Image (cartoon, rainbow, N blue to C red; front, side, top):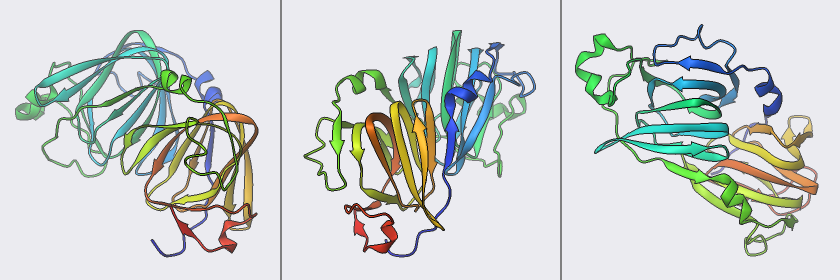
Length: 299
């Protein structure tokens, strides 16, 4: 893809600090209102065509469906059961701390947690919601006066497809990896064993990586990249209008890197990260201060 990519400032979130502000909302039901849930959840940042959210709750959520893309769920603490509608009916998946679920675009789903759960989501919009405690939300279609379907933009009327989620035990996947000291010229073969592709996600994939050293410059042409530092520390460099800027990241912090922005990470002591990376991308395997001064190389 040719053309100039805009430079913008990343969103940097201290997830641990945001979680400390929240209280567990117990007794959640599908009918719980935003006023009921006040103080138990937060909008963290804009992300692609939606936003990042975090919430703490016990009880049962409403059925929901996201019309424009997959939803990413990361269980940060506690346990929950994910119910998702497939062609042969709803199916349940047990999730615990450190697990990830990718909910397919337009699939009806909900969560319930008797003991309590803390989770983070990357949620696209618009969405539809059914605030009835039914076993299968598709049975409500003929009686929409009994349910409130919320479409944030246009109240789109359409059939919702069923899907199977990708479930990833992130802790188990991380245990398989070894730390690798990178340079901008490190090849895929050099990095073997230090990273893993976890699952497909929207127009790209989820990755887990353990690294120290300095990575290459890269930019993603179709959407924002989400970077979650799971352990260690790293410095994010991003090409801004006035030149590269640096942002210090540590375990529990998240960065949303804008679409088309040139960036790289480096870590002297080592860092473990999870990324949601859109395709295609471009990268530059030269250790330069500003990647915009050199010719781009397709990834």
